[in-house]
Image (cartoon, rainbow, N blue to C red; front, side, top):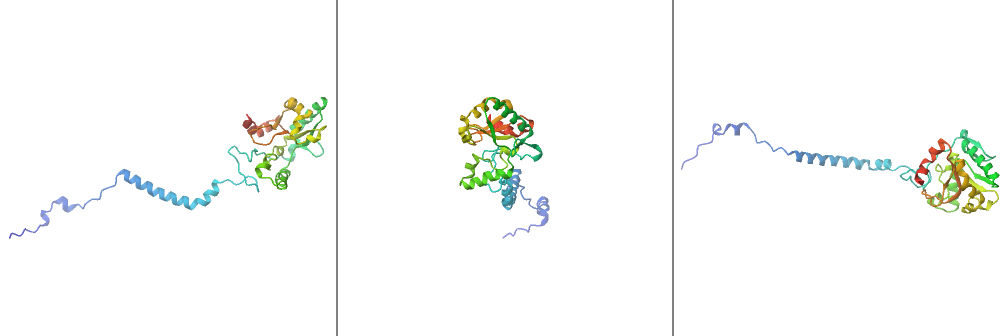
Length: 243
């Protein structure tokens, strides 16, 4: 039997003796897929750790303390736009207990004189209201009547969202028919008919007509002054929604 000669090193080709087998490099798509998987795992871990703080950051606080309601996309709260409170320096007296912004006060007094000349007794029931009073009107009456926040907001704005706080809004009544004060029956009085015909001449606009886009109850007694640059700026969002 012939025994094969041992394989000596010189008989192994040089290429096989000098190079180790090279691992196969992953393709570009493979590397990209691996990177995406790793990135996804890292991102998911970070989001999981931040879930609580992130949720609190993304969820805005309620704009009115004690009221569990949030702003709509256009900035309204339960139908009402936000309004600032006028400073005492901006207000002038129209009676012993009522105040308005200076331009609104002058226009209102002129409107009352014109109405009186036509035999109409136009009286002011409410004018500027500070936030503290508006808070009472909203929360205290809401509690007394056991109303929901949404039901209360149909007839009274939350504090910080009332036109009265600007000093440009008034509630008007008929001095000869006081039983119609703050009632939809006011629209059957001589005072309302006079306002419907002449208020625009004095730059007063009915804020909440029947079927208004804000979803506030019909208030034929509530009028706002729009005869100054500041008033127009404040009420522009409400005007735009009403168009």
